[in-house]
Image (cartoon, rainbow, N blue to C red; front, side, top):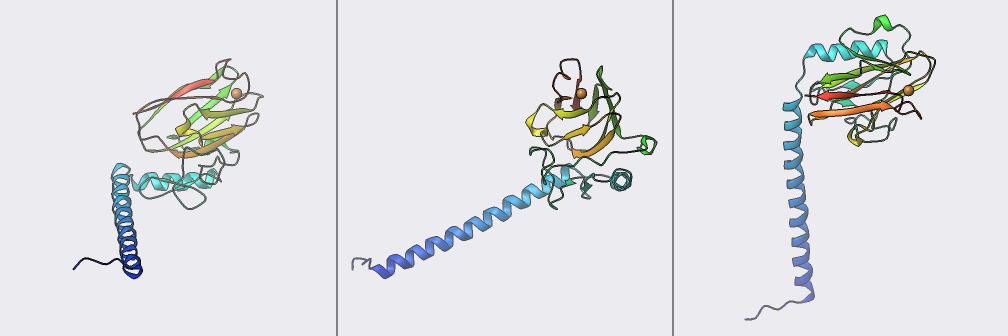
Length: 200
Ligand SMILES: [Cu+2]
């Protein structure tokens, strides 16, 4: 007996296909999310000491971000911070309020001083994916803006005015390589205010 497609059976089939599609979407989503989560956790297991260190830094440098116990920087939105968004947007790591007493900065922190002669030091080394805490000081009578060239680090920017220090906490890129930074005030890069972060 030939199958008869009346209006009702077409609707029934459509509903079954729709339900199947929704189910597949959910299964796929959960599996992919889970596997992403486990790679992230594996890659960035960090010590309790590092977490305590960042918590201590938050007291000295109000405004810097917190980190998860896996060593991921958390944005003010409560989600993981992103390095590829505009600086100061809610998803970005935030620079701290000006730091008054530089002696309070922990010795293990990366500290850059920028003057019209350039950055000191002009390069520094970090491990892929690790939490980096970085302080930038204007060592002269000028304002300076620390920024990276690579758009994957667009969000990581620190602006300081004359003799001021500010810090930022961010996750280094997962991809090893050299990431150039510079001072984003007109004419400053050309007179030598540039350097590189080496990710190993
Ligand atoms: Cu400058």
